[in-house]
Image (tube, rainbow, N blue to C red; front, top):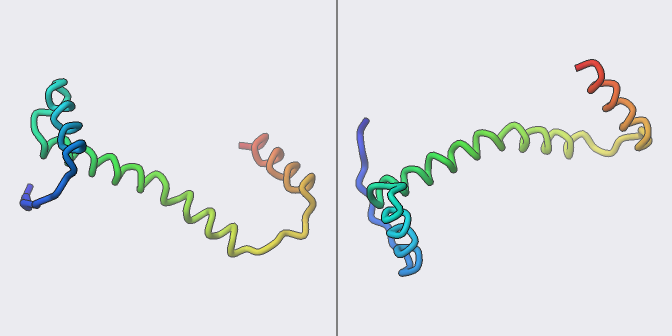
Length: 82
């Protein structure tokens, strides 16, 4: 895996936090901690992508002419068949 060197600026409290995570033994160095944060952020974004698409589709579909009761019943029927 190719690597890229980055220079980042942190506050003193952020640096202290990272050092405390390393001191706890969970991480071996700053880079490992930051790579883990990036990996978790990527995973979270991947999990949220379908939800964002569904929300956009719902907003783009406009206002329904069905009653709340009709919508609820249709959802219950779908859940019962799944």
